[in-house]
Image 1 (cartoon, rainbow, N blue to C red):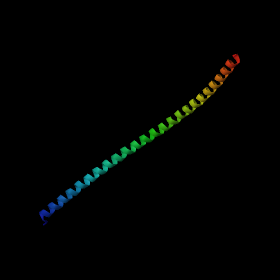
Image 2 (image 1 turned 30 degrees about the horizontal axis):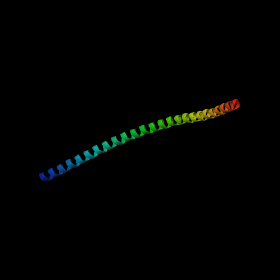
Image 3 (image 1 turned 30 degrees about the vertical axis):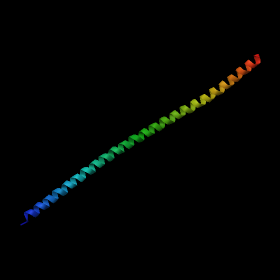
Image 4 (image 1 turned 90 degrees about the vertical axis):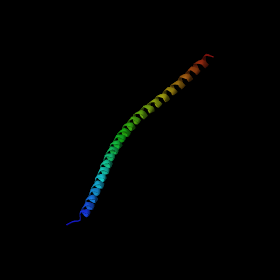
Length: 92
């Protein structure tokens, strides 16, 4: 028959190996969960980036419009001030 001590040692080694395998599986599951969470976060950040880029484009359009309006108003003020100068000079 088999040596009881040898069977006990083999059983103990098998139990340790199964414990190590179980721990490795748990680590792998946790890594997969972390990877899935990171993937979700990357997708969310990418969506935010796209939204912010679109908002920035809209705001840049508004800024360009305001800059054009500002130039137009400045030109009109220059013309008005020049006309006022001519009127004042003509009255002297």
